[in-house]
Image (tube, rainbow, N blue to C red; front, side, top):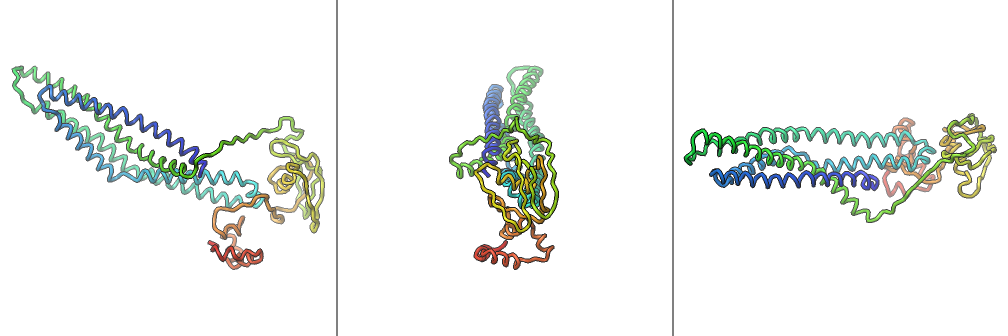
Length: 378
């Protein structure tokens, strides 16, 4: 779906890319600075090189990553599928808008509504599934980062501060004071480093989400290399002699078609024909000719109830007793059977006691036998 890729997917890709950059650059710098300060503090106080504490911290991060990996949902595929379903729903709406006239002539609004509802239900079902599978991951993530990391950090601080006995000639009170100062300093540095690591771990979800949009944008770039920009502007006529806000025409139902002083006016107020009058009775034939934009198709839109009757009197048969062939062909989303039955459905066919043999017979009448022989009705 190009509309989805060029608008929503590109916007989400850029937002997540900028967010991931800000989430990773500063935490990585904080980890380097705080770890360096902790190692220098350990060496200055004679607690060793600090390498064992660093290994413990790396081990805790590794355990956390392994535990989260066990419950991590396939975020990349879920995000890509959600974007695809959103694109399908947007495409269905765009397709409906583009072919609104043909759908209106065919009276296929119920089928189109069912297609939109089906696309919407698939998207909502996927979003609910996505939220459900993320609950265990979020719970495990919060537990490990809040409790496991806190316990490991306190252990790393307590071991060198309280178990390392050195006889440097200082009194017991001075040693307690020095250890307390070292403990508070190291605790602050370790909390800052742990916060940075936590932000990096949380960024893994953002990276997975970004990966999903990367796949979508990559697919778009593989298909589209260049797309010209187009601007469509539709303005209304301010000085229109017809009040398009309050239609006052009269419509009557009969067995013939009659226009009695009916103006042909576009929805934006352009008066194509100021006063149109003619009558077509059953069995009559009428050919309307003229240049583009003179109102030929607009007359049928008024007759088909797509445009309102702003003035005059229109007499026509019921919608069930008339059939319109639109200017552009329209193919509904579905099988070959759906194309033949449109605007009716398979349920309508079964309710009327019809079968696929009747469809094939109709196609034989229209010399379309090769089509259903080459492609199955399904």
